[in-house]
Every structure is written in C-alpha cells, then in structure tokens.
Image (cartoon, rainbow, N blue to C red):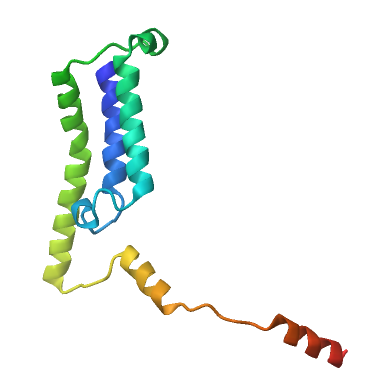
Length: 135
C-alpha cells in the first residue's frame, strides 16, 4: 500500500516535470528554470518521504516505512512517466524534422509575441475633453 501511494505521488511529480513543454525536453529547458515548479516538486517529495518514514504518520495514514531499495525502485518506476514523455518528444521532434516542419513550440510563440508587443499609451484626459466639447 505504501509503495503504491509513493509511486503515484512520485509519478505525478515526474509528469509535472515532463509536461513543461510539449516539444522541448526537460533537460533542454533546465530542471530548475521554473523555480515554482522545482520548489513544489521538492516540497512534495520531502513531505511524501516524511509521511512514509515518520512512525507517527503510520497510524494516521496506515502506511509503513520503505526500505531504501524499495524507495529507489519506486522512484525508478515512477520516473518511467518522464522517460516515456521524453522519448515521445524525441520521436515527435525527429518526425517533424524529417517532414520539414519547423513549427515553433508554444513557449517560443509566447516569447516572440511578448517581444513584439509594446505598451500602448493613451491619453484619456484628451479623449474626455473632446467628448465634453461635442456634447
């Protein structure tokens, strides 16, 4: 029961890391470039292993301690979510390169549009003044 619980939690964390981009690898993006996600992942993993290793929580959550070998196995098994996603991105990227499709990633599109956008200045007092003269 404890190993299953921990596997699900860890798989969710690996999935969150893998889903940062639909086409770019987490290793290209960087594991710690999204500080909020990195912090949330770290806190979740620490809390999970605290819940599993501290005896006081065992009676509340009906869990038991994991041996180090079990914890490593659970982590490796849960990480398969990330490795499969990375493989999908590699195959997808390679397939598009073969077809000649160089469609930018959504993140790249947002960055490009943010660079193009410039703040527009409006003069509200001038508009209000012209309205009062026409009325």
